[in-house]
Image: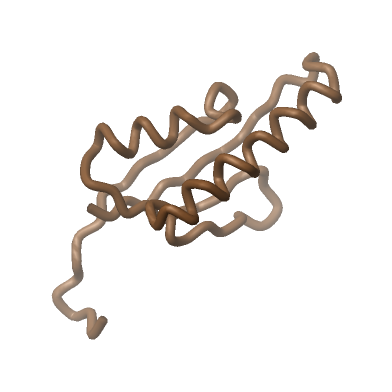
Length: 92
């Protein structure tokens, strides 16, 4: 199943910068692992925002939730999920 996922990140300003940097490093490592697994085939930055738009290719809603909630930045995210279906005019 394919999903378009928009993730907006909002880290509170009162978290010490060292902690924020550690969370970001852990986030990058976890995101890399998920991408290498093939479950996160597309990841794009939204220009001018601390956001991304991604495509996930997973077996179920539960698997998507487990992957998203495993991200270290998950507690600081607002996430919008849109299930995708093949368009009848697509040549792909």
